[in-house]
Image (cartoon, rainbow, N blue to C red; front, side, top):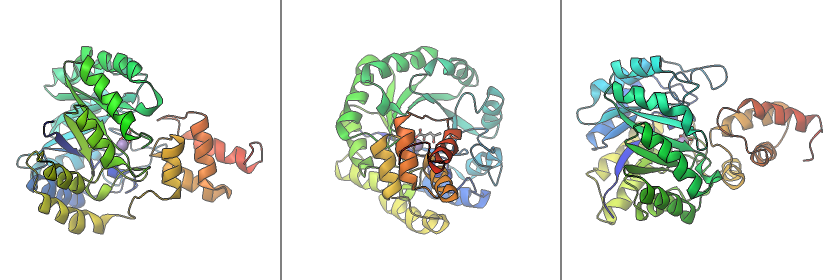
Length: 336
Ligand SMILES: C[C@H](O)CC(=O)C(=O)O
Ligand SMILES: [Mn+2]
């Protein structure tokens, strides 16, 4: 096993629990702390990627271009990454993000739809950016199917493809077999992005590493959608114990988690009953807050809404189904 490259996504996946309200001052404090702790890649974008600020996904308090530029100026060694979901973000926003200082783009699609990402990879490479593929909701498909999709991204110019456990639904063997299949089939790097809904984000990241993952994601204090992601400071400590620390200062990361990000957090993401339901039912982690709001509005237990969304195999971009399901449950047209 070799030491993985770590991408911290507190300032992107963490934007979901922050309800996209990060300020430039907060972003600078977090980016500076991560940079000083030796984290090589810091992702900064609206939780749903470039141009995610909208009625459907939640409006940002501060323009993401401003946030990207703010992070960029305080980083001495770290590179700034942005997330782009084709269909939400466009090439225009990607070019703006690059002008604001982004050097890496992570292009995310539902794990069956890699073909919609081709022009985005080609454009990113033309801009001279590192381009990473993000196959979301990867628990829903077999390793073989993921290989087919990852090959499309590789052919389009991806430098790395991630297996993304968006629902935090995988167990270690699921993470292992998916990463292993990609490693065996591709000539580029492979990454793994965990969510902690079933309490195994660190275990799954280690299983991915054992299967050959070159890149892993984390968030300070686990600040991410659903029950959050693998906590970066915890991942760093575990990797250090395995003699696989890629150059991270674990004390600085622990301090950043405790004193920089924790005071900003509206709540501590953890495997609460609703988050466990997300992992158990295999639902997109970002649906958590939307389902809780819909549940409150219509007097329905969010777990019932989430379970029904899992049964319908809802994926990213189908946030409008959450209200539909809550309304149907409230009207009694679905069994509870
Ligand atoms: C837009 C999503 O939040 C991307 C992601 O982090 C995931 O699918 O997980
Ligand atoms: Mn995520």
